[in-house]
Length: 254
Length: 273
Image (cartoon, rainbow over all chains, first blue to last red; front, side, top):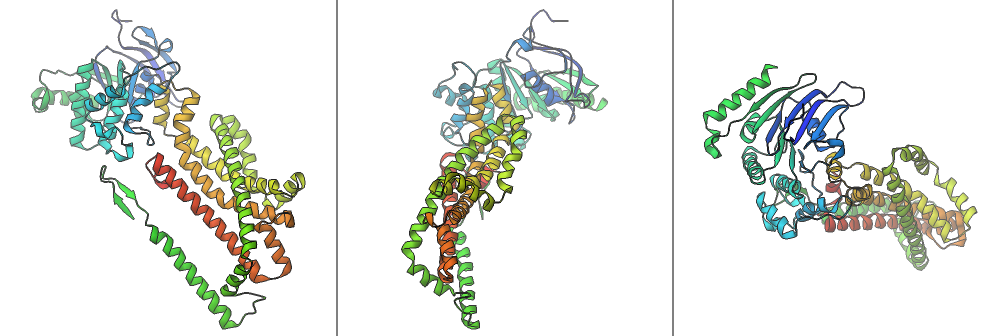
């Protein structure tokens, strides 16, 4: 049933297989509302990243339907920014050059932020103005990931899709990046969909966590995350630990 | 030798020029000493096996002839290498755009590598005549294959994430080629040109060898000196030919490193990693 207020994504009976192999996604149905922060969590090989690529329009499902804001996905171009597990930057371009890239691609005249606005965006994700002229090879891993996040935001997308973006960074940096991500989500009211193995990260960032198990099980749980407190206080709260326990239990029960 | 990048803390390969240059030169000096000592000790006739000193004396005697020949060969090889680079790069572009084209034509590209150049050279010379053009074409043919394979690899070996990024931004095929595949393939193209630079010199010399006295290149000089049995002069020509190949390889390596450092901020080795 299609909801009355158009959801950001409404998937019905979605399946996807690569060639003749067993399906990666099977009879999957879910709804993600606009402005929601949803995390897809589950074991390796359960199809989390595949689902994210389907939502980005990078993969075509074998069957089923996807509505994006009430319209068939095949009829619309998803207005999405994507952050990969690796920063995926062009090493021959400067940081600013990498940020300009999305505006240089596509057919027709692209309008986008000015260089001053791009510098402001860099500051929002924790980069300095002096980093603008540096090539990715001159930036640390964390700074590269921040730049990758900034690039995903350049076109002011309605959806931000993140595929385990903080998997390769250390714990301290991970926490800082998580803070930045949640702040950006709240400031922009972005629909944000994150793929992660890390349940702490899921409990910390999300409004809702979807537990995915390998096909044919699919989405086995949808766990809402209460957010009555924020900041460091929240990490120590009973509410946060209770959410974490619920996620652990949901993941282990299948 | 490695050092840490002060910004990222990542290890960066650092080359030490004196060591890179001095070690091979020391080996060369040692070989020359052994060669000279062996010829003197065993009293080998210079007609059979001239000593390095005798080769140097002979080289000095024909220095103008050698210089002219080396310049002519270098010009033919450089022109051939340019032709090979253009043709090889265009072929690689075609190979990277279509699997069908790649499957249909790649076996014929391999033929360029497997057919012996001493078989191709006479055919080219008979077809195009005994001149600079024929020599250039032989050099181009011999330099083509490494450029095709390296550039094709570079054009295809683009990170899947970056390809997805371009698709997400609705990049056209042309934009993907220009903004992603070509810059990503540049280190591979430069590596191909570096390998081909030596092949182009060999190609030019083989071409000149078959053209004969019609051209004053090193190949023709080798042919003349072989026929006249002045071994010390023949050795001098061979020495200059080798030196030309080494200089060409080294010069193109340095130019490649300069281009990558200037435009990419990385060395050839780092860029291909």
